[in-house]
Image 1 (cartoon, rainbow, N blue to C red):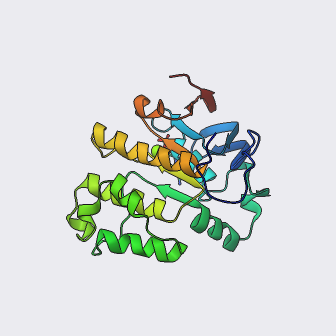
Image 2 (image 1 turned 90 degrees about the horizontal axis):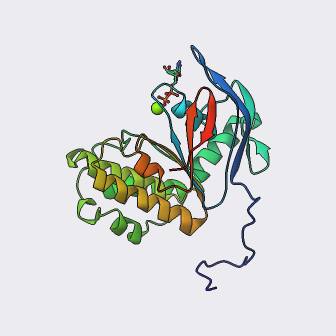
Length: 231
Ligand SMILES: Nc1ncnc2c1ncn2[C@@H]1O[C@H](COP(=O)(O)OP(=O)(O)O)[C@@H](O)[C@H]1O
Ligand SMILES: [Mg+2]
């Protein structure tokens, strides 16, 4: 088999190797959202989460992505329980290893797309990959003020901004909700290619079963549990 990745380690990643592992997660706001949920993301794995509005999908995404401490349960990352780490360490993980994409884009308004990517590039000390710009079809928008771009273009730029920092894990909360179908598939495929190439992990909340079907693993959050789905 041809080796396609650079680097000195030639050991294949074992199936047991996990990028992140959550055990016995439970969380409630006004009502119990989920109880005793286990979930892990393996290298190269993309997990789609389906479920009706209010079932707790975003809450689960927040818990796995350093943003919210669960009522009970553990999130293990690099061998440590994330939420027992000092705030500074948790912030470091969020900055360095985790990319979060929301439905509405949080770009720096008043700046060009290029400048938005440069901010991300500087913070993470990673170069902007011109191939990524091409794949996301934003070459022609790079010099434009992001406020002047269409919703779809802004979402592509915000995905580029997250990928520029080369995260190990991408968490995307209905990232294509504002995009037309064709654009949505293109954008999802960029994320999936990135995950395959980097042996990273993707956790994506979506309403679209066709998008979910492109992922390696699909669950439905229903009746407080994660139920495996075959699409
Ligand atoms: N920070 C919060 N404070 C209080 N209630 C919340 C908070 N976040 C979410 N909820 C509630 O928890 C429930 C599930 O929300 P959410 O995780 O966003 O579900 P989903 O993403 O599946 O639509 C909703 O009833 C929502 O109002
Ligand atoms: Mg949600």
